[in-house]
Image 1: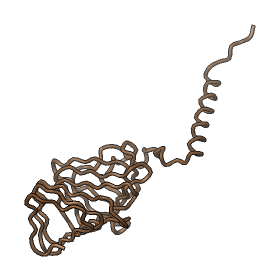
Image 2: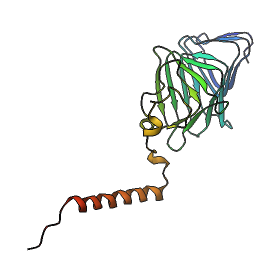
Image 3: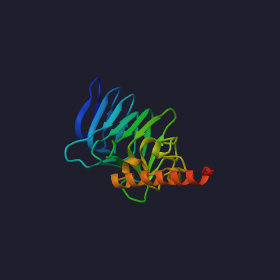
Image 4: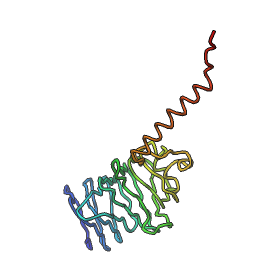
Length: 212
């Protein structure tokens, strides 16, 4: 809990569970801060050229970012299928690189703390993003650049609705279901159906040779 002023002069914060800026301030300089559960800011955070990382931690199935913060570089990664909640009514702004990722079969869920009430995200000029294996709902990024210029399927991700400027507008209608979400019996049935359909078209389009 930071109630005074913390200046990271050549040092980093590593392995923290929570970072709570409670009326105080952090000047991150060019250093890094890693945490595994909650980031709560009711004070002041000076990002400078720092990197803030959300990582997996013991017993933390949900992580939250509370209050409004401007980050420089931000990374959120998980291999456990956990949920990252951004506070509805607050705005998270980003100056530098943003990387948000899960893994195959364990997408990182990105949500608002209040379902149906979008959290605000602002990608400022010069910010860059990399996303993969994420599932997003209730996020409004209309105040800045689009989070991902690619349809969700291109990054093995899912648009679960009520998002603005996160993925291209047609992504929900156009994106097919990623193959990794299909159980093996359904995948085999899909392949068999495609083969059967291909043989049917061949029979219709290629005339049989006449016997003489």
